Image 1: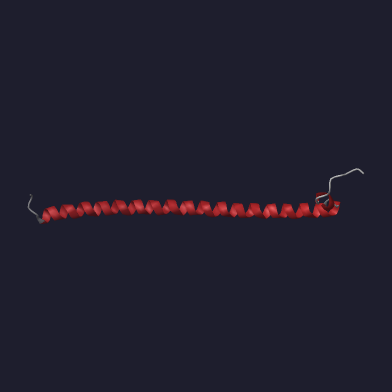
Image 2: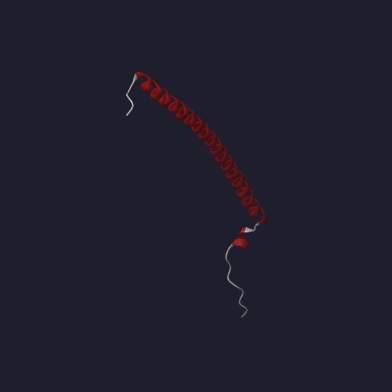
Length: 84
């Protein structure tokens, strides 16, 4: 077994320091990627919210058209025709 010297300890500490520096860089990259993904998720959520708004306006418009054209009564369930 090699003798534990200050030089050996110094080399081990340099290696550990190097590994920690690489880990910090990897964590930093991961944080950046997560922030980018968060931005995409927020943009997607905003787009979905806008789509729901457009759909709600179209639904209101169709309701108004139905009322104007008196199409409501045709949409109600009716009894089938039975000749007597």
